[in-house]
Length: 398
Image 1 (tube, rainbow, N blue to C red):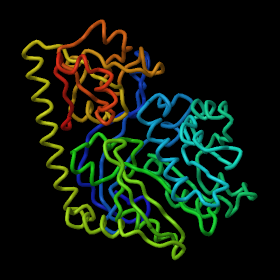
Image 2: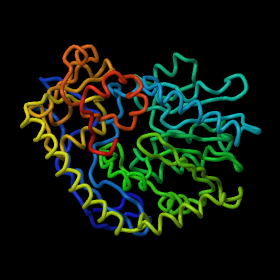
Image 3: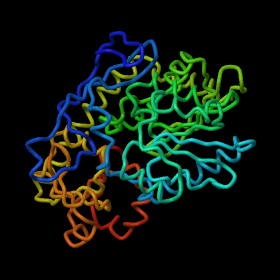
């Protein structure tokens, strides 16, 4: 296994087995042509970087059929409003140009006054990019990298803030991405982004964070080391609840801004928990294996008692759980979801039917596997009548 940044050999420490494209919900006539790869994970001690080995090409994951729309989640809409307000409060002074990498349907960018601030989005999936364009947001339907931004010469060193949310971990070629950031970011500007946090994944044993789109799972150590290679430095870290536990990172050019005490505090905490080295990975591996055994045991017991099980939320994360644990349509009757593009299709790899919420309410199961556990607050408010009546569970503690 080769580290994607240092290009040095690293040892894989765990395999989750054969895995399909996580968001590759498919029709029955597409089963035979389904793409699979080996989901293997390794750790670069030099960069303290947790990463997957093999993965599909970005174009296979992010295209006109991409099924995730940020605006479909009330929780994410509220979060992006908070995120934008936070930027205005702490980094709004002199803010004239703001660019988002992976802008999806424009949910985040719409929070900025376009008359006062020039906002720009980069989004590779055309279906969601078109929605952003309809909102009047300048959106480039392409991947963000140096090759695609070097022609934007009028914006060279002019962007005050570059942002992203759950995007940077999707990019195999981080060098090319950071080179693009370096080309556009003003001398005193900041790159502010949020990513699923390695420490939270370890604590919760939320191994469903590991799938084709999540090529890296970052920590403060890995972010600090990676950006130092390009003459940037980590100046602030702010924990977030999104995606089951994320971290907001603030990056600036070296020596341009004061480093917040929160950075050193988190780095020390990571060292005590072995997040910066391979020991943390090996401990996590044992926890994953136990979690898998416990989950299979719970589902087998429910089926032995002739209970009907349904999944709630056809998430990309669920693909790792279902395929790693070998759970198919014989164990779970169906998975309900609100996304029209997914309904009527089947789960990647395990081929469990994806149904509408109407079907779910008309065919209530005995037990509900909450795949969208990271949205449990929003879901439990919505489903409060079913909370006491039904057996809700997940592979993590709810």
